[in-house]
Figure 1 (cartoon, one colour):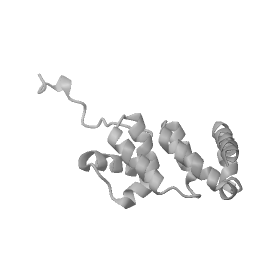
Figure 2 (figure 1 turned 120 degrees about the vertical axis):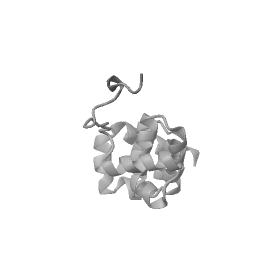
Figure 3 (figure 1 turned 180 degrees about the vertical axis):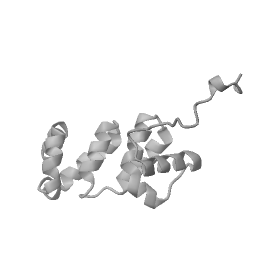
Figure 4 (figure 1 turned 90 degrees about the vertical axis):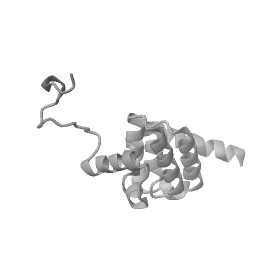
Length: 139
C-alpha cells in the first residue's frame, strides 16, 4: 500500500513553514535531532525557537528557551523577552521580566526602544505600570 504512487508526494513539492526563516528552521531541526544547541545558536535564535516551541508544542525546547531567556536577561533585551513571554504564555518568565523591568525602570522606559514597544504592546505597558505601582506599595 505504501509503495503505491498515490501515497507519495510529488518530488517538487515541499513543506513550507512560513513563520521560520531558513536558518531558524535549520536550527529547530538541529535541536529536534540532537536535543541541544550551541550557545551561539541559542543566542541567535532563542526568540524564534520559543515561538516555534509554543506553536508546535515542544515542551522540552520551551523549557530550554525559557531558561536561556532568564539567564540572558538584560536591559537591552527585556522588552523583547517580555513580548515573547506574553505571546507564548510563559507566566514564570513574564513575572521575572516584569520584576526586572521595575528594578531597571529608568534605563528601560526612557530608551528609544520603549516608545516603539509601547505603541505595539499597550497592554504590556499597562502591566509594567501596574507592576511598578505594586512594587512601590510593597516598599
